[in-house]
Image (tube, rainbow, N blue to C red; front, side, top):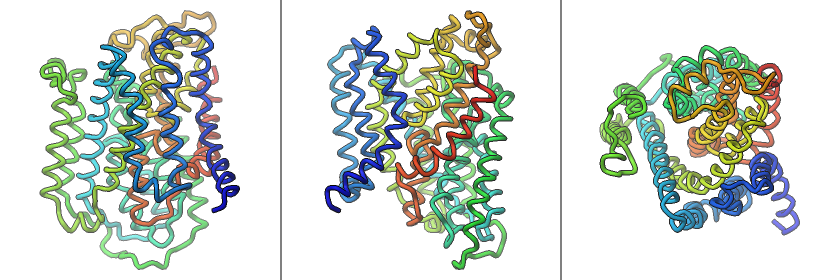
Length: 481
């Protein structure tokens, strides 16, 4: 590739990412211009390792794939070092922040790894060829299942049979719509479904609060995506690949469903959910809790006792979770300053934030940052706008029930919480890093040599033209305040 073509390709690839980074950049610049106090603690330049890591994840596999394949671990670690050194030498609060981030990362990777291993031991064979109708039923089933076992659990359980039944006709959009529907938007009805909603539940939002208020937008968005998918899938036609279409649905490794259930139950083993539940963090100052220990034990037992034929049929190996582990340790730590800057900006400017601004800021940032901490930052900012404390469960319940706005003519708090909840879950589908299972689904599909879109193709060809109009319509009818 000559240098001119390389530069043209790089510019073309980077454009969609710059679009998605516009909101974080605006927040950084606004914070700097405003001379906010938190800038003295968190300099704007400290957010650039995260931006660079995001650019590398987006562009490196396309522009220099061999380098990235062999050195992505080193890139992630090297870009993490400046942030680690800054907070280590910044004093006590910096060390506390690093410790809290390590706890979040270990909790994240324990859940993701254990679900990946347990689901890898469940072999589901569907005795049907992939078709618009069959695929639609699988996607809708996944969307509903995501609210029971989480978007990660549903994705890990269904992605392999989904790939198998579409052998010979699998296109890039098949992977994309699976991520849209099963890995993200499908989990928008319960706290189990998606991490941001679970964090809201831990803070005091009633368990069925989102279901009672978001079911209609959830249903309309899912239906719209399914209709678009049906049009795309109908064009593909039938496959001539050899697929076993006998025997209906066959399952091997059924014992792992017990492990799957135990994993979901273990999610609730948290002092914030169960009063008096022991905390290893407080008792022994460990960066993990009993929940993470249980998840790890379940994963080891599930793998050691797994049905070998099920593992072989799923072509199970640890490479997808290995890549996730390295990349997300970089993402978790390099995004600390970005989250601090954005969180500080949201808190200081919450009085001037309308429902519209909360919706779009939470949404766009959930696509380029992890959607769970993004939710928490704007959640805290919204409560602050109403003079409430995000750390007080009583205040959170009042906020969820609806508190009158201190600004004459403004709407109640309930709509603010709904906007933040919907945006953090739905917009997590904008990029591969917006939600935990996105990258995992992408890696599993890539190992089967499926036509998987790279990071930037996913953004400019699918999420921007398909998702943003839907989310814009949702804003116009629900959150245009």
